[in-house]
Length: 482
Image (cartoon, rainbow, N blue to C red; front, side, top):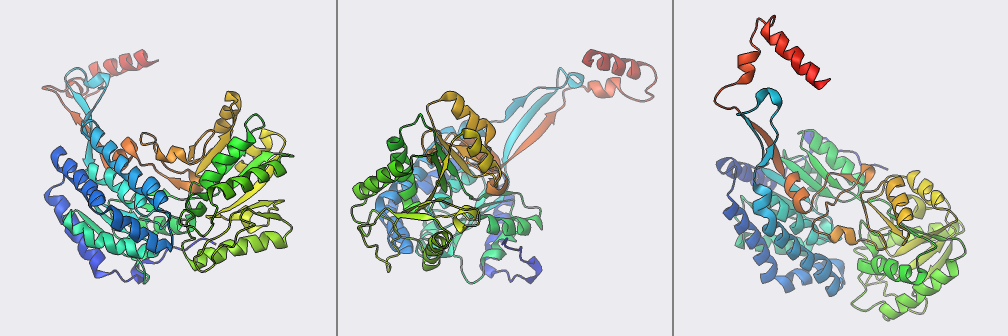
């Protein structure tokens, strides 16, 4: 069921939201176009915030999860964010340069066309809980690099990290440049009703619809990074063992709580037992103790119960369920959820219709690639697609016939971490892009500017009365175009 957009007239605006927005708007108007030096200084401050507080940031995320693998936080959040800031700093001067554009014939030769990237103003960022450091700081690299100011609302499930960032931010940035806020107490909808110059939301499709509807009241442009059911398909020519290794790596990472994770998998018919055997071996090898620190907890009790409900629903409707941690006992209090494969799915199962966001992998079988494409295309366009095949023509078949936000071939997830690739969804999985140049462009107004020369050919040739020379010149120009 889709979330309905709240009526802005019925929402109580927290005073700190409005005060912060007003202060940032005023500061933007006083300095609408920060210099390259100022933007580099902001990026350097963002880097210092991370480096000075590495252990505290990791610990805050761990506390929010109950247990979050330290390696996963450092690898997928801390390290990637540092790279993102570095990439932005390295390219910023080039991105800021006005772009030359061709001048139309009738204004040639003395006029000039330029596209000038300019800051939008105040940008709002709504951050989910699953990668809270990456999904708050990474956009800030583009937002601050583009010369904007930012207000960042964290998730209610990231309370400890939010408290830490609220405490740390004033040491590195003035409040009229960057502010962090906690969620909770029904404050979230109010944030999206502020008249930002751009709003970035990452989260569920249902909430994304509500955010977009709220933003529309102010005609605020939005970038929506949503989720959906991202499929993977293993072709007959690809090693099933190698595919299992790569699929299991991403499906177990963060206990599967990734918007671009593999939501369901196609394997060739008859390969079910072989694939299952590989997955059991890999999980036992990589996670000998499901309760150990390397295996991340499910974020909260509600999410844990939702995963349990998905399995119960599938079992009741005839699915065959394989527990990959069959010889271990996950700690229920620590919200450690054993990974499962699910076979014999039916269309009415929750696992067939809802994004899973956890370590459950539905496995479907197929005989021909057209079956795979037709099935995926009969559902919402996913945020990612993962074909595993060495056959170049088959790779292109899936890329051409199945639309998705992004693609990783013979791997999963890694296209998201490529700094020179844009990231974004399509249709129900999102709209708009950011990362690298696309992020800079998203948070800039690419402003077209026409510079007239010392004299104006238009004024000389096309003044009324039009009968006579103006019409002859126009007919000549039309003839040249036809």
